[in-house]
Image (cartoon, rainbow, N blue to C red; front, side, top):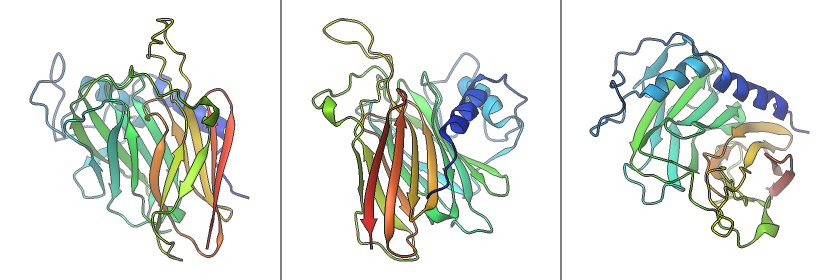
Length: 282
């Protein structure tokens, strides 16, 4: 059986991070937030008033290093559809027992729910690269903060120009498929080495800010809250998510198969409904 972080623990951690009072911020030499908001010529590495608050609440006074070549965030400068903005996290550090990426935070500064995802990783990921799609509600910085097993924090950010991501209505053509969890390997597995996986959960991921065109009332929020992934009983990663992840949440990630086994994803949503997807490998 896989050993996963209990969902209740992940939820308590999120509430603490977003609800606690802001602590003193660590100094950073790169930039400072502009008084009165972000200017039109905002740079990818700039700060924002929202980030200043988030940083204190989530990371306290722990220094965050930028530009040390540990993590890279790839996202479009202009995204045509704010409800589905592709992002890619590239870890420039191999996952080894001696030093690995332990945790990643994916944030959208100006979203109603800025902390889109917290990923709890193990060395079984092999290579801590992730791809997903985000809702971006207005022009905003998107950030990833990578926490190493030695306690270091590293950040990269991109400024994304788009809007409307949290109010775009979801597709409701097949409500009977909600929760279907699909795992696929884009290429044959490589035993003992990082192997890429695509995971998709069919789910509307309602934000609570979408209007029903018939009733002209807001659709209640309803989204995938946690995903726990394991292989042959070994934990790969746990994800604590929010509605800033796009409809039909999709993740591309790696795992290291040490032999034949079952790749398994356990999913829970905000209505306490549980779903499972599995794939036999090898």
